[in-house]
Length: 115
Length: 112
Image (tube, rainbow over all chains, first blue to last red; front, top):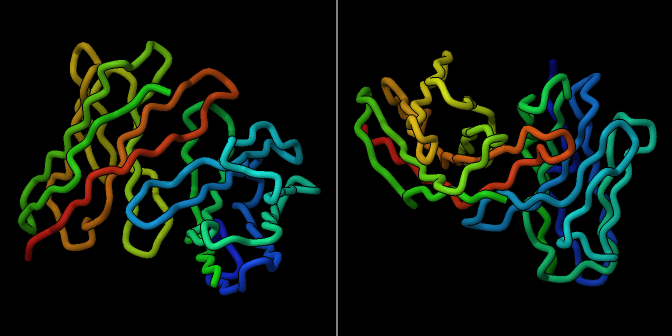
């Protein structure tokens, strides 16, 4: 168990550019979640997958955001035409759904700074 | 989502017990009480969860009020490594509704 891995750890981009983040969940975990966290706030839910199916998207996930999990393993989160308000920590988590209380295992996040 | 209320911050001395309170007066019958913590520069990590009975694990204990409208996370002997933000979360056990909704949590400071 190597834990949830996120890449890159830090990303600085200029407003208007596109960025893509990657998340590698714990092997065989079938649920994968994306959260966003700004300074002083708790993580906010963005979306989640069960295997390759995206089951829920938050209203926070505007049309500029897209997430994929093509083979039910790793996932990518893309932000198009970044805005300064997108600056945040983007967290990925995975879980093995054998019961509804299966804990989420979080990665250490990708910190995005939009200049 | 049912909400929780926690103090913004707490302080405790090293090697003493810490009691972190959480109020959840609108809890429903299918909600479990989960606790996560977030150490500086890390993602949140699971601590403990329970439904009605008190729970113990290697990290902490969870005491749940009889009416389930409040709970307390107990760290039996705080160390400097326990300094973190602690989140109390109600998690719906109905399939498909299990996402975690975080509040702002309690920032715990441990005094050496």
